Image 1 (cartoon, rainbow, N blue to C red):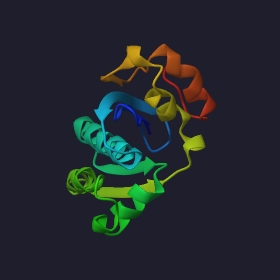
Image 2: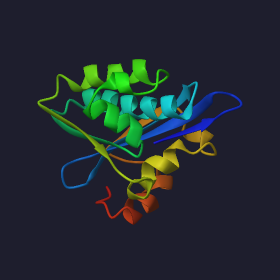
Image 3: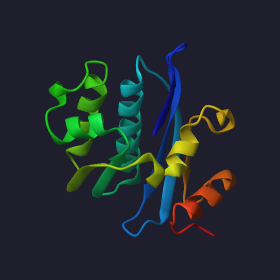
Image 4: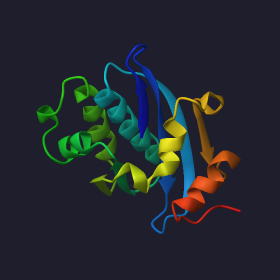
Length: 151
């Protein structure tokens, strides 16, 4: 998920990594400079790919609420908007080495943790990755998403 401010061309991405049964593995929040909301969403997908690479997983499902970006990744990236093209190309390259990489659209309501991470007001959580133990401010939302939370 991402947030983006038109006036400053800045925003944040929020990424959540879960295992195959939905248990929390890691989360990441990054600040971004993007020229559009579409580019900001592409950055969020790319940050998810980078997190999966860093975690050393071999099978991934990359989910995003950006139907446009997911459609491009499933089909032809060249059919998407120019401002997202370089980042989506990087996503494809990052996805190639995985034994199994699937691109999946999901509604924002299905991943409120990533949405919360991307919100502008959470500047204290900027450019940070949490592995195994999420920040306490996310525990409640992880439980609301119906996922297994770390103890």
